[in-house]
Length: 183
Image 1: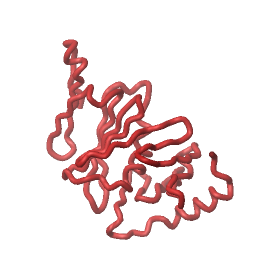
Image 2: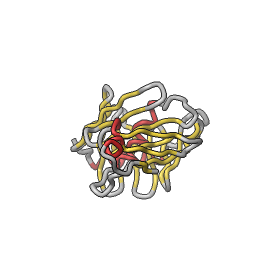
Image 3: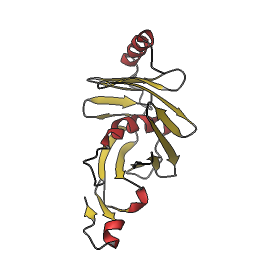
Image 4: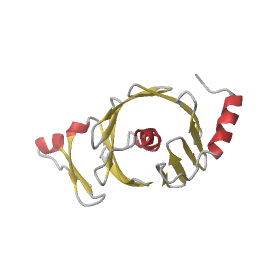
């Protein structure tokens, strides 16, 4: 269901007030976009959590209306399954896999899963064939390591170094005798 123009205006006004600066509230920034557990705000980005728990707004040129229920993120044309492990969050959609992990080993707060997913769901590209990683500073919890895998996660072995140093080994290529490390 697409949001009505009236609900979009109300939502966008609410987004403008969503960042309270509460010191206990996890928040971060990726490029020019600020995020917290209730909103994403930046140039061409205004997305907020609605009272029913769904997320609505504008992500660049796209209107978004995403629901999160029972470990499933659903929107217009996509469905991703979220799995929480003690030290990781996996998001799989049958095509690729996102993994979120805190560098300090702590748990990822539930309220940060969807904002991080919004940023990194756009990594899928027919031209991207190697795994990808980046680190996102999030106050007050520290740095979150984001890993993106084209295809199934268990195809790769992940070698963690200090901080955000990561090396991937493609187990399929290694088994076939081809080059495998990707950094």
